Length: 267
Image (cartoon, rainbow, N blue to C red; front, side):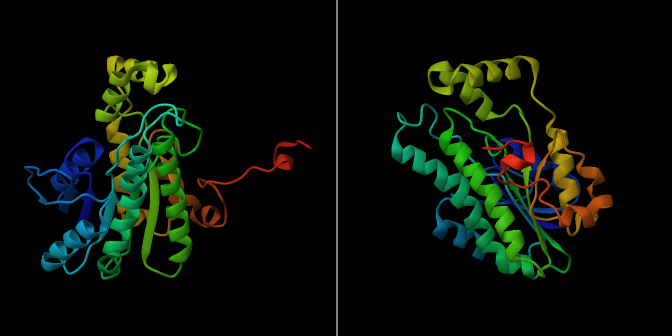
């Protein structure tokens, strides 16, 4: 497969790029800083549409199609009580995490449609997408937006040979974990700070589970599975193909509003 991966210079994006290259895929990494790698790379700030367009043009000169796009670029950005953080830093976080996801998918849309197989888009979420995350308001809002973007695009792409899903990778040790611990409880909050400290000391969750879910979503086995948020650590994603028809007709693994009557409550 020919796969474009954003955030390929560090963290999960770098791990995926290296593992998928070793598995025989052709990889093109996009990152804000130059990197030495065995796969092709372009310097690109995904929050800047002009730079994403340039990267797309560069790749199109070499590849007539793209089989998959993995959006792993992200920053935690503005950390601290929402009414105290710098507004421009808050906005920058949204630009990188949410705009950066949309810009990349938008730019490579035509190359994905040229794929001779069913193309795949994988967007990384988590980080507060399914519950409130105090002191990480920008990151949580952006990652929630990514999930709704994935659901919306899946609905728009009915009849198009592209699957798009969001991945919650779990509490994996990355630079983000170290940043949370370094900023301390004053900015990160006591709960987040203590969790980061434990994670760094005891070890985070398995990055190999996140890689396994990505491999599954890239494979033909997942064809038709689209518009979902899947947890690499907790969901039985390997068993989903057996329930494809039921899943397609449901709101399982999607964001939604729970009504009082669904919980046996009356107001």
